[in-house]
Image 1 (cartoon, rainbow, N blue to C red):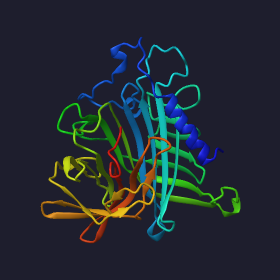
Image 2: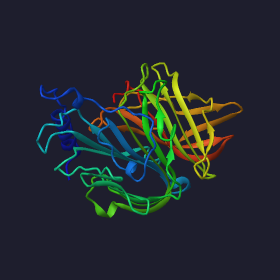
Image 3: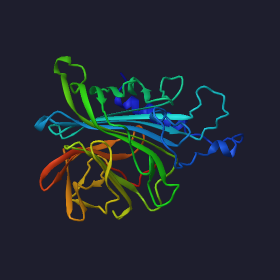
Image 4: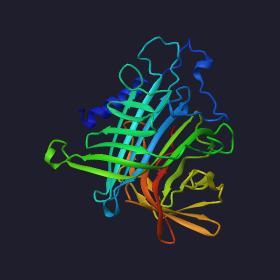
Length: 371
């Protein structure tokens, strides 16, 4: 298996050679992305990839284990369409790039075990399917089965994660039947659905630091819950925004909460959404006037970015606290998508009592997010 240094060098090379120039023979139509417009989402087709759009991701996060032994996990696959001209006949033309991240959060270790890979879709082996969720990249995979289960296989250098996730709940369509605004203007939108309250069975191998001493490897069989998102879009951040704060929380009573806000450089909310669903996916509390209040702060020793330690979410007559599983859950993605972001396992508490578990995503804290 390649060393981390060699993989990072190869990734940087890949990104250099796949940044397309504007060729003289490329028509204007070939150098544009389609707009996101209201339309019904159709399944199973929309479980698959949408390669005409600029950016797309499939994202699974969750908690494994119980009590003091609990840990968090993240698996994300990205697809990015370049503006390389479609009339280039080469089979190796870099029209579609793929990236993947995986991370495990262990409070006992105090930092993430993280891995990332990158490649171009095509003969080299990176692939996606437009008919259903089926993503493959350098031995990593994420796919949906005919019986509506998700299967993940991540053979990273310092861990191997194999899991199966299932749910009896239909996809939850975000925004207006899957048309999700990310700002006040119609062009700032994505197609977006979620699969909350996934039941997970996982096989995990924690490899020794050198990855050689097999006797030191830990083999764990774990169960837990997860959250799955699939989103695709052609738009950039709204004017004035430097990043976003987002949560996906599985409540212990079977309901689920998704909320996000677009944030400016001063930490003020520019646009937000609050979406609480019952155990059947029915909307409970839409468009709540909820404020995000950062509590404390900590500085990453890797990126030097300063993040909130936690948040208090306030609505009329109610308040909730987001309590991280551990402080440092920053992802170093410089060798794939570029830059740093925070992807952290959190508990949702009300009146000091844990009412749900999920993940908090923070972007644009060290530098404005570049999409």
